[in-house]
Image (cartoon, rainbow, N blue to C red; front, top):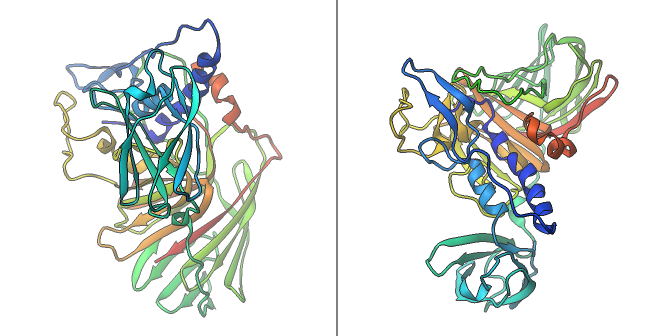
Length: 460
């Protein structure tokens, strides 16, 4: 079973491989390259331990496809569709590049779908050439995305694409209407109340102790600042099947001031304080309609090379399903890929045994493998979200993050509760061979640097 805290780092591999291959492809005299380890380099010992260089294959020991496999397929694909978006029209003009060495696109079958309208055609494009082709449709408003699928003469799918057509309304979330919101001040707690809504904020540490909506507890902790250090090591045969969880929030939180006041938008809670390594503040604008707007700003007092930073919250028990809509690196992914643009994932799956034997062939996909903090699919970082959140298993509560395509989402189990991070910065893992390729995505923090962000959280 996978022990990596955030399996999402596997999809980050594409951030290095894609520009590497593009440079190789455009350079005369380059014969090609090779994948160093196509299969995970892990060996199971008789005593139950595992050794080797680690799970660095694009498929695992049982030949199940891992996230890197699809990224590799897309990067090396000989079919490149260069058109990123289309306007509604009866004839779509699409730009393409043929990266086959010998095969004309005319040897491929192109199947297309727009809403309920579909068809099949062929494209004339010589090997190594760029060009355009047309797809004629009867109703240009039949759908919001044009799906393209290229097949070779054997019926094997070479590549697939989804091209947005017209304005993409699916990422728009309606605004909420403010509701009457009251503030009650007690000795140790600010209580924000409204119809079917109660939010208790500690006057000691400035954090949400409990948020109840329609009689159900939804939130039971946060916000906490997370500035997770980038960690890594050399290329050594030191694989450990018991890799510890690495999810530490900043430590040593001490408040300087916690205040709350009524305003036209509800109640504004303002908190100032210090962590070990950071000092700053956050504000929570709370309305009884379930909306919480969080603005945070912290100044570093020490240097840090982070992998992720943002704010963390804790749900109540039972929130074991995550969902998301995001901007993907590719427009099409397999249904069980951890980086698919739209999806849902459970913390644990009933068809995966609790005590899976690594010597027994799994009947489930790699995304369902799990550790104590959830399945690979559940706990992976989702980059560039438009929305993300958690549902409880009986559908009586929801936590929703509304974003703009530039923030990132990650969740994991801690006991019965689910913790979730809304990150304003994410970078790839620390890997020595790819350091130069990942360098553009790093943001080292120096003493005196500021990290900040805004979060829109909605409770249903």
